[in-house]
Structures are given as structure tokens and as C-alpha cells.
Image 1: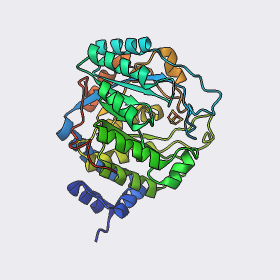
Image 2: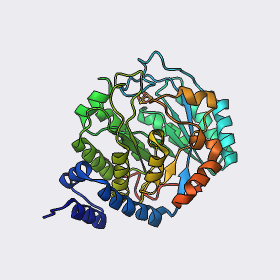
Image 3: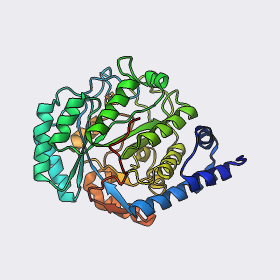
Length: 357
Ligand code: SF4
């Protein structure tokens, strides 16, 4: 019988396993001492598995149009104040050229669900990128698409796909999304991506409206079973032009705690320190990087686009978040024992393309 939180944390670290009840307790009761203990263990696991390198991915936000209406997102279709833009193939290729010159070996193409970017637009673009930069990985983050579309993009050369599940509780999912969006459809899309062979990333916001500690525990256990190649965890940050504008931001402490927990549960997974964490304070991004995170996604979009891709308030996309400033980032991270790694940075997760949630 476990009596103290401290011994519960020790047991979790030594076994790399935890049940739902213990996980809820850890999430809801951990104080700064427990957080420190887990962060230290997670940092050591990251060093053992991946060394001191932090992989950098060049992020191109290529469209701010979206057909969806996720309640939390500044790009939702109902937000008439959102500034909309689309990048052409030439503009995207130019971003990648500049990023490749900087040393980036992963390009992340991210956007809203925008029907303008059909397979016939994306396939030649992906093929051209692969032909020009055969040493790079291409990550897509385009939301839900039919399985045959995912397959065509994979066959064209895409390597990875990011699609957060956001919450594995269907009633919570329904509070964050309009009725035409369902958790079942999201999970099916994740299964499809895995079956095709993508390195799949999933994840969720910490502190999203109506979220409970039970939800968080279930999200973590879902991810443990799903075995993604990557996990994106960031605090919820409200957007001023959405119905959630008055909800508070998620806790950065809890976000870092969850990053540490996930590193302990899945030692070989890729774990970004997300821009949302950096938006709250760069010290939280740094804390994440010494607590198990090992990926950063500097923005390499054209400057005019960066301000317009406003998914939450005050999202940072310049300074150390700008792909043009890798040297600045490297200098900042050095005292934390972190070294920028511009390699492809593939996931060490075994069987990341097998199994189903
Ligand atoms: S979260 Fe993604 S899918 Fe939802 S509205 Fe925003 S851009 Fe569109």
C-alpha cells in the first residue's frame, strides 16, 4: 500500500508504469518537490536515450484558413476578425530553401483544414521538396483527411504527421468542438495514419476549459497505449476572439509535470517544448527541456504570415522562436546543457506505426 506521494513518485520512476488512480493523485497533488523529482528523472532518461541534443524542426504555417470551428482556436471559421492568408508553392519552397541553408533537416507544413490545399496541390510540392532535399524529413499537420489522401501524401514523400487528439473523453471533446467534429473521427484518423506508416504525433492542451484531472490521466494513458512517435503538449492559452476568451491559461507547472511523466512512461518518444509554453514564459520552455522535452519548432514562415497565424493570444514567432535565429537559441540553451541538433531527428520509438488505440 502506497502511503505517500513521494513513494508513489519513486515507484513510478523505478517501474516506468502507473495506474489511473495513482496518476490522478500525482497530477492533482504533486508539489514543487515532486515536480523536481520527476523532472530530474525525466531529464536523465532523455539524456540516456537522446543525449543532450535538442532537435529543431522548421515550422511553416502556410494557411490561416480553416473550415472547422474548434471553440478554442483563433483560426476557427466563425472568427471574422482572423486575418486569412495562403502561401503558394513557390513561397513554401522559398521558406524551405532558407531553412535548409540554416541547417534544418525537418520541415513541418502546418495549416488549418483548408480545402484549397488538395492532394493535387500538395503531392507535387512534397515530391519537389523530397527531390531537392533528400536528406530532410517532411512533417504534415493538416488536420483530418480521408485515409486515401493521407496515403497519397505519404507515397509522395511525407514522413510524419501531427494530429492532436485534444481529449480522449468524448463529452469533453464535445465541449471543445462543434457537433460536426467527433472524437471517433479523430481517433480513426490517428489509426489510419499509423497504419499507413507515418511517424505520428498526437497530444493535447493542458488546462483546456472543462478539463479535469481524470481527463488528463486518461489522455496520458491513451497516449501510452497508442505509442505515438511524438507527443505535443502545451498549455491552453485563450484567444480574445473566441467563446473561450475569458477562460484562464493552463498551468505551465502542470504542463511540465505532464511532459516529465510522459518521458518516464515513454522514454524513446519525441517530446517538443511547445511554443505555447514559451509564450507564457521562456523559462517554462527551458524547464521543459531539462525535464524530458527534446524538440523545438522554430518558425520559418514569412514574417507577414507569422502575426496572422493567431491560434491563441500573443503567440510568439520571432526571437528565439524564429528559425532565422538558431544561433541565438543555441546560445540561450547552452547553460542548460542543451545543444541544437539540426539532424532529421527520427523517433526512437519502436513499432510507432503498429498497434491501435
Ligand atoms: S484547431 Fe485546427 S482545425 Fe480547429 S479551428 Fe483551429 S486550425 Fe482549424
